[in-house]
Length: 269
Ligand code: ATP
Image (cartoon, rainbow, N blue to C red; front, side):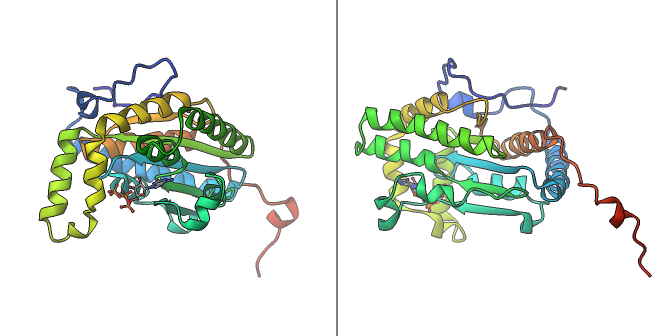
């Protein structure tokens, strides 16, 4: 059986983002097989991160977007379950503070970009700025279209400076979100995660779908591609992300730098 694999979004893609696209297809490996594949992919990520750090020519930025309860936290935890935490940093972006609002929308993002040698993970990102204000009607079409261009330019600049970027949209179905939100209401250990505002966003499902569709198509570029991840099956979701991250690092010709000859000739007495 061929292993499931993600392909980047192209500007001409229809991207219906309907409930069917969120579900696993028919020929998905068994749960046990997916768990093993995920374990191997997470191991590869961890091994390659060591070389990324030693090599220090590139940084990796992994962006996670998705509706409430689509599993961003779990995908991050599992993709990097074996990675040395010292080599990475996760940033969660919430509603901008008063100070952040006074700046351009990329201001708070730029200084969270990983340094060369490191992996940076964004749990939500600058893409919120073409979703939330658009759906709430606080920016115009002209403004959000300009932001697409500004984000593409920003990401191009980063990539030309050694930052490798991969962006994942965790696409869950409306039915699955209901199950997950209900669980947050019922499970005492998940209760704290429930926010009334999540229901407001759920009520605007079609508007968010349209905003996601446009943003993914406008901002999936050769230097910073978007991937739509079917997110209803959590094992498949985590495996698809972890393997894409591992493959990305694997293609970087990473190498451990060779010490100068005089050091290699040294003897410890
Ligand atoms: P989960 O997905 O598990 O529910 P979460 O990512 O929603 O968790 P929270 O801290 O509860 O985590 O929510 C963050 C909130 O901040 C989201 O509603 C998101 O839309 C909002 N947000 C993030 N960035 C922006 C932005 N630039 N403008 C407006 N709202 C934003």
